Length: 215
Image (cartoon, rainbow, N blue to C red; front, top):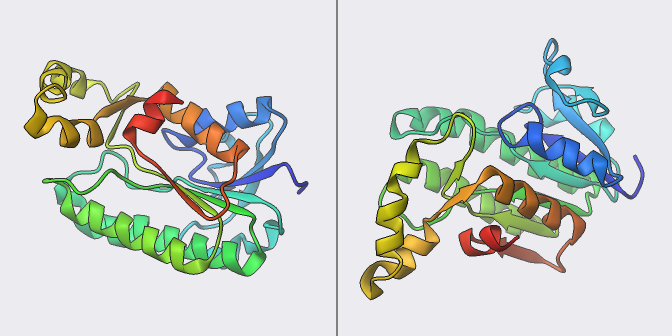
């Protein structure tokens, strides 16, 4: 792959299927790991890389120094009942991605984490925080995005909470938490990810909810 190349893990998901076309339209050459039989789910012009996101060795040879790695793998519709899946899927895939990216000399690692601290989803936050720590320890240049809930097709129910957020953001005692755990749209999330890919940081950059909204 060229210097303007991006490798995506999680390319067929809610965010990845929308991010990849945007990156391709900006001139990036995009490859994405896909299980056998799932290749056709990838967006047009995306290079399908057969592999297993839970085993980095299955796709490592398709990553070259200078690539940007975007890690989007995660259990769909997270809930407290999925604590074991957060460990077996979210954590394992991210740790494998970080390991392989480090070994292959990736230039920039983009990771979608979650806003924290928070009073709910503790198992989910614990796994994502552990992966953030591993990413920092790797020495890779990294952008870590911390949304709380991404609104979009199939993810609309939190719109009912918007009036409560509006009030909470204006009360001094709740403003900080409401803004940190605020809602973002899928369009805002895609713009923030594209901006992250376009602008690698010097070391580690955190993109919180307010920064995602401003993208």
